[in-house]
Image 1 (cartoon, helix red, strand yellow):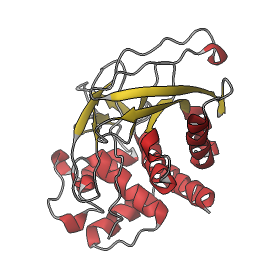
Image 2 (spheres, rainbow, N blue to C red):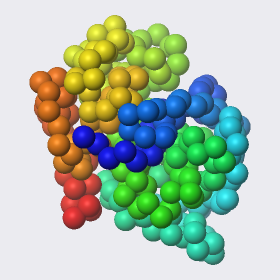
Image 3 (cartoon, rainbow, N blue to C red):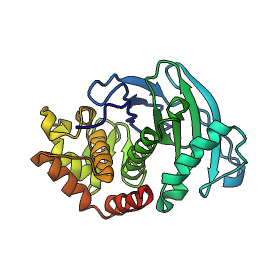
Length: 261
């Protein structure tokens, strides 16, 4: 069984496409889907040290409390708000050195309906923007689990291996776009989501939300793998084996396990 805690699970989207994000909340086995939409992003000003804060419009009741622009793993400016500083400390504690250049901004938000725990999307100036809900700051385990889930998106939806939207696809097409041939997401989708259709049996997935899409199935299974949650079922075991066979995901899992102690 998985903890009946409120989970963030997201879909990362290309800023240029202004596509919808799918979020998850309200218990591991009672998901309520809500949507957000990437807004107009800020423009990089010259070099990384001059990078502007990127603005993101959320299609629900979200208040932006503050943003931390990150350069080479370090906040560009001192963080003065104690809650934002605490959220940054959690992110910094778990974000792996191998992906330090991938985090361009942390946006701390507050979502009134409690439908959005967090979200990631590609930054206009390169890297990724991670948004987290301040309401979860007292549940450090949930925030850490959220970050681990998002890191699997950062790796498997990177521009080198994934193209968002309905572009011509020489790899494997899923609902978000095209996974490059030979990539871990393409192999995962081909094996467990043929034709972008997954199994409808709960025992073939680590939780209910993993049944929603191939990329979320991969990320949920990855999170379960990192945290060593008790799992069973032939298909789940096959999914774990498929991820373990990928050098990048396997290395990421090892690095995260070391950080988790």
